[in-house]
Every structure is written in structure tokens, then in C-alpha cells.
Length: 161
Image (tube, rainbow, N blue to C red; front, side):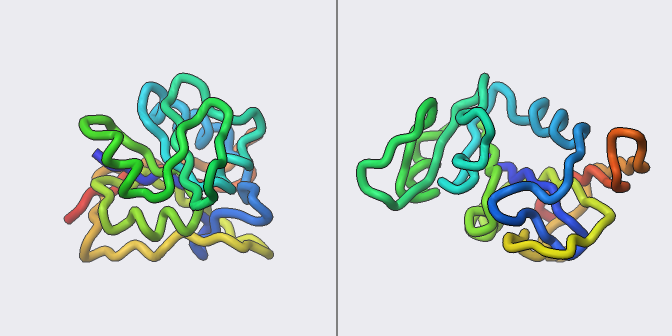
């Protein structure tokens, strides 16, 4: 099972300068709950954006075309296909960035997205468009902004139609 997990603004923006656009503690809790105990695959820049390096209680895989590069607490592969061969029988989560999301969208089984009701002034990374002919909503839960969340947001799980 391959799942893509991401938080995106109304214009599909996901990041700026290798950082998340919005601080949503409940989104971070959901991310941790869904990915703990599983394999996460990310690009090099996403790995470098993690404040404490490899995420605990998960198999961390980093994709990089650079020869001989290594990442503390993570395995490294040159391509998504190469990594997936090493993950047979595992539930895998694709956690970014934009180029990896675009590549994985064609082979993913499920999307776990947080849709944020906001559009940033600036962004340099975007999630690919979601084709409603290919993806159908399986589950949706909407939340209003509160003292810990400055934006309204919706957790939406999609499966292939």
C-alpha cells in the first residue's frame, strides 16, 4: 500500500524555502499517528527540512541521485522504484517534496491530505492537481480555526476511483 500524505493550501501550495506554509498541530498529530510504525519515503530536501533529522519509530528512506551520500538514521536510494523494491509488503508513506509527490501520484493507492482554507502570499512548492476521475473521497473531516490553528482545514482521505 502506497499512501501520499501532505498538507496543501487552496492553490495546492505546500511549501516555501523548504518549510511548511502553515502551523497546524492537529495535522502534525495526524501525520505522526498515520506514519508511525511504517516506512516513509522523502526527497533529500524534505529530509534536510526535518528539525531533528530522521523521524523516530519509522523506517526513513531518502531519495537522492548524489553518489555516496548518506543520511543519519535513514536509508538512501537513487529512485522511487529502487526504494519501493526494498519495501515489498510494507505500508509506505510518501511525505514529499513536490517532485516526489508528482512522481508517486501515478502509483499511489491512497491520499491522506489536509486541505487548508488559505492561500499563501508566496510558495515555491506545489502539490499536483488531483483528478476527480481518478480519486474519490473516502472520508472527510472538517475543523474550524481555534486558539491553536489559525486556518480552517479538512482531513480528506482519497482512494482510487
